[in-house]
Structure formats: C-alpha cells, structure tokens
Length: 397
Image 1: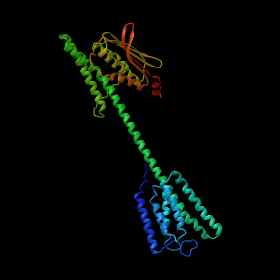
Image 2: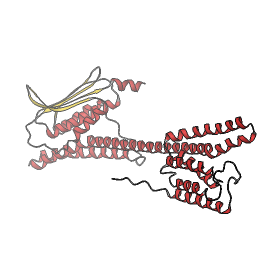
Image 3: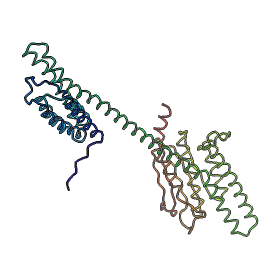
Image 4: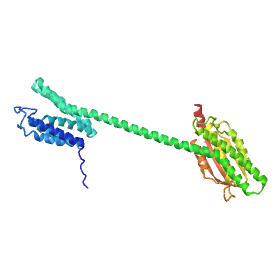
C-alpha cells in the first residue's frame, strides 16, 4: 500500500506564497542584487533569475515535512541564483530554509549544520582575504555568515528552548501522574484501614447480638430470653459507642470529643471476659513484654477477630488464646474446636480473615489460618508472627 506524502503545513504555504510574491514584485521593479556588468553574472537578463526564485519558493512548502530535501534543493537554487542578477527574496527564503532545517530536522542535522556553516563562514572570511589582500574581501565571509551561519545558530537556539520546554512539560506530567498515583494509593490504603477498623470494632458486637437474638427467639424460657436481651443491650450500647467514636475520628474537627484510645495488649483480659459473657469458653495464656504500638494494635485485633469467628463458627469446646514474646517477634495462636456445625451461628463475609492478613502483611509478618488435626480432634487454628526488632529500632532512632 502506497504511503501518501504529508501535506505541507498551512503556514509554509503562506510563507512560500509571500516569498514568491515579493520576489516577483522586485523582479517587476527591476531590482536585483547584482548589475549586468558584474563578472560573476553568467546568465544576464531578467528572466533567468525567475527559475531559482520559483524553485526555492517550492522548497518553502517542504520546510517542515522534508527539511533536508528542501535545504539541499534550495542550496542548488541559491547557487544558480548567484549566476544571475540575483533576487533578495531568494536569499531571504534560503535563510528560512536553513533555519527550518535545524529547527525541524533530525537531531544529528541540528548539531551538524551550525558547525558546518560556521566553518564555511570562517573559510569565506579568511581565504578571499588571503588571496586578494583587500579589506573588501572580508565582506564575503560576512555574507556567508548572515545567509547560513546566523539562521542555523538561531534555529539551534530555538530548538534547544523548545526541547527544554517539552522536557519540562513531560516532567510536569510525570510528576502529576506520580502525585495522582500516590493520592490514589493513599486513598485506597486509608479506605482499607477504615474497613479493617470498622469491621474489628463492630463485628464482634453485632455477631453477639445476632447469636443471642436467635437464642431469645428460639427458646421459650423467660430467664434465658432476659439474659439474652441483656447481652444484646450491652453489645448494642458498646457497638454504638465505638461507632460514634469512629465517626468522631473520621470527621475532622467536627467532634470535640477525644478520639478513642488505641487498644493494647493489656485489654486482652477485658476482651476475653466479654467473649465469655457472650457464651464462649475462652482460656487466655499471654506472656509478653512491651512491644511497639503497631504490633500491639495488630495483635489485639487478631485476637479480637479470632474470638468473633470462634463465636460464630466454632463447635462447643474451649477456645485457647496463646501469646508469647520471642526474640524476633510476638507469636500469636488462637485455636477453637472445628466442625460439628452445619451452619454458622451468625453470617460472615470472610472480611475478618482478609483484615488479619492485611494487618500482618503491613508489619512484614507471617499469617496462617486453617484446620489442623490432632489427638484431641480437629481445631481451627489462627497463627501470626509479628516482628518487633526492626520496628523497635526504628522507633528508638
């Protein structure tokens, strides 16, 4: 399939038309660069200078689309023009072709043309003066410099400024793109953190409410119903309080109340007592020293979510919570009886396991959750190892 050549730019068309019109006007007035008696004029008369004028005007149409071809053809036309009486319009259009060849040509051409024209200018200055030994010979170098070197140098300066502006624009776009990516990642991370906090703070209470409300509806016993309603009320009040605190934190400056205190491992006892009040048989075995606040919060939330899952899914039996402070981190293990239930006591979405994995991953720890078989039966075991060495060193620094 043939490739159509690019169409000339509209501005180039107007430039060619203006140069040709100006040249024809000067030709009609009989104004030329040289007189008929000049020894350099080989083609005397008015008509021969129209050919270089027309050719170089046609080259102006290619100054953007084919700058190298336009310059080479224009150089031949200028050489032919020097054999006639010459036209100022031809010389002016040639300077524009030299300027466009540097500005719109290849990077190699943009580097070479100013150097080549500079050498030609020096040669045109020194050689005629060395041959003729008259000051007027220096004018030839001035003419060559004005026709070739000056437009080439101007084109190089303009091109460098244009390239610098383009590079600055690209850097600005890249910076804006990186800033947008950082903003998106920050928003995503903040939404994930809010989802984890909301789930961990409210899911435990709502699960207890769902389980005890089911018991109150299914058992026709006044005492059992009252006990269930008491647990429901307590969890409702606590869940509402935590929800209000979370909303107060999210509303920047809209709530004068102090933000909720970050849970610590010292609150595990109260957490276990609350699970026992909800009907879960829990044993806590925790021995730990002071650990960084991020590790404390993650460990607390992991135990909290594990107890919530045990309340919803575990078979009857004892749930064991074990925390050990090791040399390289904090080890967490929560095990509960597995199996024996056709359906969970309260519906779940699996977001709890996702949240626990995310918390551990943020601290570069390890996390496992799944059934394990032992001599006492099958247990659902949640294991997490949270490193504390690097975090402690960073906090001290």
